[in-house]
Every structure is written in structure tokens, then in C-alpha cells.
Amino acid sequence: MDAVDFLDLEPLLTEEEKMIRDTCRRFVGDRVMPGIEKWFEAAEFPVEVATELGSLGLLGMHLSGYGCAGTNAVSYGLACLELEAGDAGFRSFVSVQGSLAMWPIWKYGSEEQKQEWLPRMAAGEAIGCFGLTEPDFGSDPAGMRTSAKKNGSDWVLNGNKLWITNGGIADVAIVWARTDEGVRGFLVPRNTKGFTTRDIHRKLSLRASVTSELILDNCRLPADAVLPGVTGMKGPLSCLSEARFGIVWGVMGSARACYECALEYSKTRIAFDKPIGSFQLTQEKLVNMMLEINKGLLLALHLGRKKDDGNLAPQQVSFGKLNNVREALAIAREARTILGANGVTLEYPVIRHANNLESVLTYEGTSEIHTLILGQAITGLNAFA
Image (cartoon, rainbow, N blue to C red; front, side):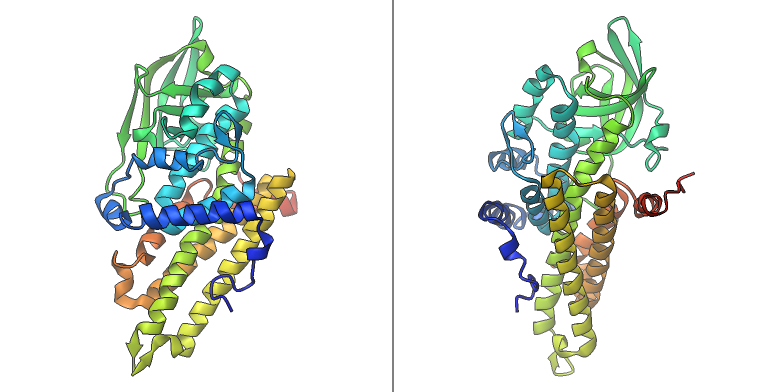
């Protein structure tokens, strides 16, 4: 039996999906793994990799036109899976670029905005970020304080956004702000007067990823900076649903990397004159990891097929995000126990993935928020307030 693909899911994928997965896996092996320990320890993200990801067609890959690859949702999910098997920082970069920055331009932008930004973003020549979360408004983004006021034909934005992936390296920020007519999205180029960023340091999670604060101080934008296709919280929430779909797949990459490491370690680590993999308690741990990875991948694939058929509900994405992140984090922690003291060093990938997953558990909807989304879905009763 295949110790990883125990349920033999391989035949459920098309040849094109396998090719995209294998291409991503080779990229991670050749480009990410040789440097990831150094980048994680130094808290650096290699910005030059953006154009490499673009050349592979991985940026905005599930979008059509404007230089985007136009793949299906399952292919996008498989790419997230393989990227996060390397490190969540790389999957986060691709997820933010494609689902949180490019997708709202593609979905809600004007033709001029699409032509200006999407081809360059697809090539990795321009980097985007998504400004929604604020210092006091994470799980309740509708309470945001960032405002956009009309001044003649211009817009003037004021406010702060926090915990923004790619913020410090972004060429354009998709900033969501309160206006007199409701929440609107704005394209804010980096060189806009009154717009600055400040990177967040001393993180112990997602270290190979840029996380920043966005500062808007009387930031003046022309009338055509607003996304014309959406008003209200539907805009940013729909973007989050796109990105959460990638997380459903991505965290199974982290889980798989931890499981594979623990499995191999258990065969070579000798205790009491035999491999620890021969002990019943160790086998139980490994079997439980294998069970949850295979179930998580089945769930991700099912959601991917539903997305490709056009009938995936946001609540079903919450189902996937809640389950798969929770199980991936449990797998990483359990794998660490098999490695013992070696599990807390960067010589092995386990503690790095475990630390990264602590952030993924929180961002793009905490486990508590997704629990309440599902609770409302099954009872019809709102428990948010």
C-alpha cells in the first residue's frame, strides 16, 4: 500500500491535473527546499521567486484571460498543496496574489484596471496584497474604521490595515474602506502619496513571508481607482472564500510533509534496540495521521469538483477550512512527538510547519468564526452577536 496515497486517489485526477501537480512538486524540490531553512530562520521571503512562479503560470492560475493560465479549481488546489508542502509562506504568496489581489480585479474591476494590472501580476512582475483586517477588526471586518471620502472627483482614504501578507513588497494594494454608499474596494499603487507600509517583525510563524501594516494618511486616489463591480461586504468576503479554498488544499501539504518526515524517522530511530516505528503507540500515531490526510484530500477534491461545477457554497468552504486546518495542526504536533527533541529543530520540517499552521488556523477566518458559520448553516440561527 502507498503510505501517503493510501486510498489510491491518483486515478481521480486528470492527466493535466497530475502534470500541474508534478510541475509544482519539482519547483518546490528544486527552488524552495534548498533555501527554506535559511529563509525561515532569517525571516526573509525571496522576492525574486515571484517571476519564477509567474513563468510557471501559477499566479492567478484559476483565472482566464489577461495572461492567466485558466486552469480548473482542482489544479489550483493541487498547486497550493505542493507549495505548502514546501512552506506555507510560498503558498500564502500565491494565494494572496491570485485569490485576494488578482481575483477581485478580475471579478469586480473595470476593463482598464484588468488590462493595467492582471497581465503584470500573472507574470509576477507586479505583486499585490489585500487590505481588509484592521488592528481592532479581524473577525468582524464590517466594523472597519478605514474610510474613503469623496473630494471633488477624487477619493481620500484614511486608516490602517494590519497583518497584511505581501504588504511590504506589494506594487498595488486592494484596500477595502467604508464609504457613504457602503464598503468599496480601491486599487492603491505603492507610489501613491500618503500610502506607506511597515513590516511586522519578530514573528515565530510564517517567517518566510512578508507581513505588514498598511498606513493610509490622506491617501488621494483618482475616481477610477475604485472597483466598480461591487459594493458592500460581499466584495471582500467573496475574495476570502476564494482564498480559503486554496487553504483547504494547502494545509494538507503541510500535514503530508510532517507525516512523511515522521514516518521515515520512525524507521531509522532506534530505541530499546529496535526502530520506534515498530512500537504500537508510534504506529497508532502514524495511522491516525495517514487517515486524516487521506480524508482531508478527499474533502478537498470533492470541494474542488463542486467549485469547477459552479455549485460550491461558501459554507462548504468553511467546512473544509475548519476541518483540514485543525487536522493538519494536530498532525504536525503529533509528528513532533515522534521526532522527540529533533522535532524542534530546523533540521527537520515539522516545527516549521507546525508554527506556520498556527497562523493559518487564525487567518482568513478563525476556527471559531468558521464554527459559527457552520452552526448558522445547520440551525438557521445566528450566534455571531
